[in-house]
Length: 363
Image 1 (cartoon, rainbow, N blue to C red):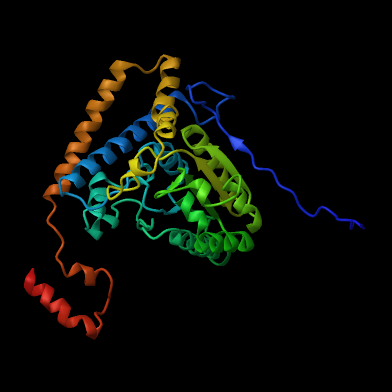
Image 2: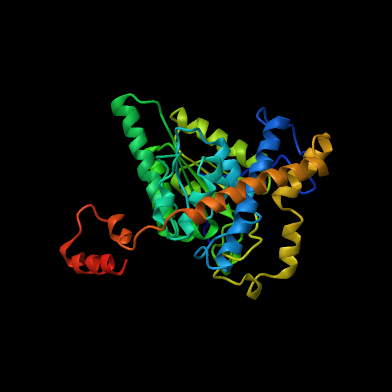
């Protein structure tokens, strides 16, 4: 039987980046930014993110918040992304982003307001151009591509410096058409966009193995002509460095990048979920041994700059900050019921006038 001659047209490799292994030991020389002071600051923010999430879950259970998505076990991704971004960059997040929001200057009481049903929480006092949290899966990635196009247009037409957009999503987002459309646009138009995939192994109850036959999620960027990288998502140094390099490329006019951060969701999908129904306990136990806070604390202890005394002082400081934020949230007057229209329409359509007036009367 005749075997046709074939010519290799393309091939690819996916690299993986890690600086701190599961036991908190270095695997290679650390990048320049990773000074002791910076690493302590990153550890502080990850600890704060975990405390904010833990308190939010408790508040939801007592009727003070609505459904809440914790980022337990994934703090290194949010904090690493937020820390690497320049102030002028624009964030287009998904909904599981406590660490990144804190790094971007969003206040704790604003985060609680969002999940308490008050849209004023997303009118951030800082990070004024960052987009609101996106609950629909992967739609924020198309928003990110649109924002990146606008930033490139402003650079080319108005001479402004190149700013970048950063968008994030879970592993489940890479199974949506919005994701593929966004990276295709970004690759073809060479947009200043960084796409970060939080591969926490679960799309609600569907495991990563049930979503795709791809060996990595990073390789999905190859078809869009976008450089990609997989990083240890429990290593905040690796996340920070990968995002920083991707942003430097975007700022220099080099176009988009995609980063897959591999981690594990140590909690329910949201407070409306019960992960014990589907998460294997042996996998969860193993994941706890790799979680990001313990890993970085072990490294800091090895440097001789962290111990029980520093940890106790940090916990005390952050508890005070958290209690003040909860106080502010609880004492903020609730928005009026008519806000559901006022935040959506500049001019109220005639079809909704009667409903609006009824809500006015009820309130």
